[in-house]
Image 1 (cartoon, rainbow over the protein chains, first blue to last red):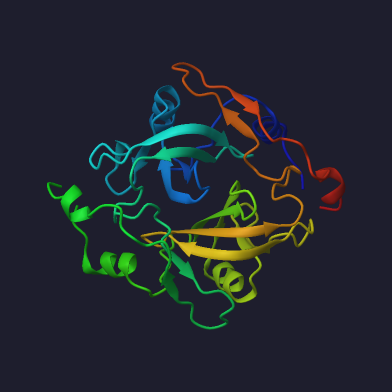
Image 2 (image 1 turned 90 degrees about the horizontal axis):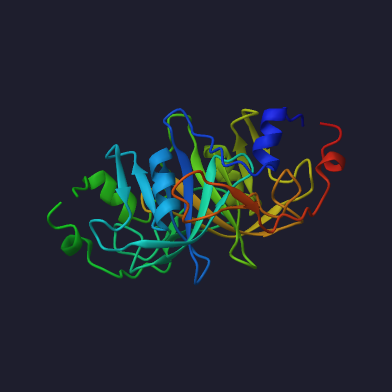
Length: 144
Length: 144
């Protein structure tokens, strides 16, 4: 496993140098500071990263809407960032957040409300887990 | 916010139908079942997903090596999957794992061993956090 000097600096240095993909994005994982549960996986562009760092509130970049987006700006379900970390090659960000209400647009606290049954060699199936809704998405997004 | 029937089925149904990107991959977040810490963010293709589900050991697809990869096959630092969940639109997977040793190729338990200092309007900087090495990567990967 060879590592170039450039890679080494990015992995072992203290310079913030996010490695954006071809679309100018890094992956962001948000976990619940209270439970450790993964709430959502989304993306940030340079501006979303900088606004998140400066404000301590989570900003993302929506690939489907092609727009910068402050989490909760429509739903009120904001995320206060308690800690932000970069991974080894700086193409992924982990934020631990205080989640107001629920992270998922379906109304669940986490986007990960279905489990895959393990140990099946053939067709995999899902089952609901922690899938209660904290809000009614039809009411929250009714004007959208 | 309009949702097509197809999207609705993917979000509310119990059919396992991962939404692969243009490269045939979904994003996978692995967290430590003991601590809730995010250990790594990586990718799975269809085969990696199916091998993980069938075996209960984490398999990934390496974009840099363009190859299927059983976590720990070189380093011995395997991941036993305790739970696997899909997110709302099924383009991201969360696995909670029992991590043998360390997840990161740098020798740290987690790839997220640096924190970003929040509240800075200007240039962001990193600081090491939980950055002790569990193994010496030069020794583990010496033949690679």
